Amino acid sequence: MLYIKCPWCGYRDDAEFHYGGEAHIKRPFDADSLSDEEFSEYLFQKSNTKGLTLERWVHTSGCRRWFNVLRNTVTNEIIEVYPSNQLPSSQAGKEYYKNNWRRKSAAESLTTRQVEK
Amino acid sequence: MDDAALPKQKDSGTSPLDKLIKVPGGAKDAGIFLKECRHSGKLILRGDPSDDLFIKSTSKVLGYKLPLTPNTFLKNSEYTSVWLGPNEWLVNSLPGDDSSLENDLNIALTDVHHSVTNVSDNSTIIQLSGPNARSVIMKGCAVDVHPRVFNPGDAFQSNLAAASVIMWQLNLIPTFNIMVRASFASYLWKWLLDAGAEFGVQIRL
Image (cartoon, rainbow over all chains, first blue to last red; front, side, top):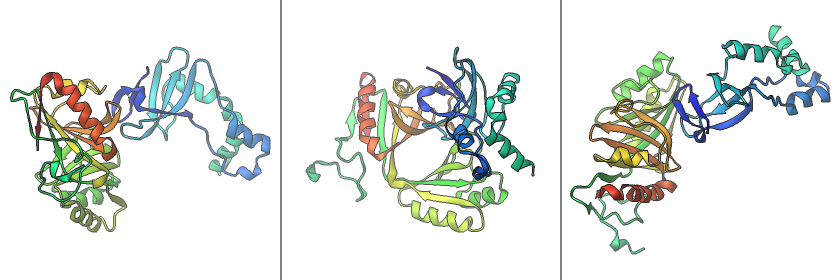
């Protein structure tokens, strides 16, 4: 049983939440310019880390808002909870985000390039 | 079921709890009291609380500013507004007032980004009170309702006996209003009777 701190409602049982998979998967801005391999990498490849992971949760039985969680998959320790439109603010979360393979993927570099324009 | 066997109600509408035997009465020294708040109006109001015009326009209709603190509610003699999310509220009104309130809100918010949805018939409100009301809630709900953290003016959305509910505390008796889906209402009413049996249950109409 996880005890998750919803940013709005505070600590609640995990029975009240639904899991939303990996966080920070950015949809490529111009998907047409990706090869099939690069697009399938964006769409199907998911991080399955042993240790820290950034993931999305929704407080289904409560306020029904989405948020992000930094969790250790081995110890189930929840290190950080933060709004879904933000990046992690803890040192461990920042490092995990920065070093994730997705940051170097073709789909994401395309997203970044488009945003920078 | 023979309608003649049902307790006579003042209103002509039906409630999801009509098919249950709700004969008023029970133990005089009961630990909990159960009552259904029939046909109260329920609106889901959405809008941006950082928009001053939204807050001003709604407070003109409701008579007070919408609660912005998570899991609280505000009320006056006519309307109860429960915080459901950072941009979402439940407005509970007296029976029969829902259509006019819906209209008033839509007119007041004409030039403001908002939505008002009438969900009156989607759910019903069971009022649970009495000295043992907290003990009954604690049997089926993980949210802490101890008076050191939960008091009149506080509300929450969670599961009670696995049924999805919105609950708010009205007074120090304590009295809780439990809003539950119509399809779960008879199940929850029976669960409350069962969970309250050890304290004695009195049913009020």
